[in-house]
Image (tube, rainbow, N blue to C red; front, side):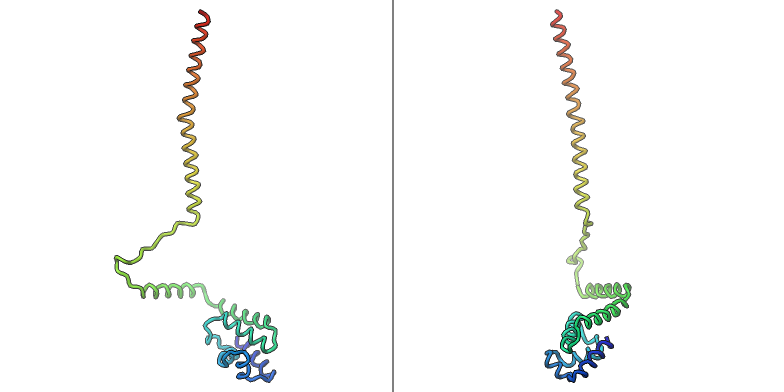
Length: 169
């Protein structure tokens, strides 16, 4: 960022524009412009806001704002890619611990942790219910329908036999 800031300062000076004049024209405080030109990113809380200011400043200086923003993005990538995953996880754990530390609960009012079911639990439950219904239907058919057919067949055979006997006599 320091190289980009120095470049912006050199372009401003070559254009014959003072820091106060640029500050007035852009409606941005001179302290912000000085921090950008010095490469002091710690003075800014929001990098996206800083990016927009740099873009506006580049356009004001007659530069291609997209190229300047690309340079700024390269800086951001280099800066953020140096933070290791363990550092990020440690910082999150510290924030969580601080948050829990601030909250005071009695044993009777402390909220319980809710265990969320997996996302596919609903689909699995529907498949399980469908399979159970299918098994139940098959069992009902086996138990109720098949024995009745055999009973009906026996009764028909008895009737046929009896009709044969009556016809012979």
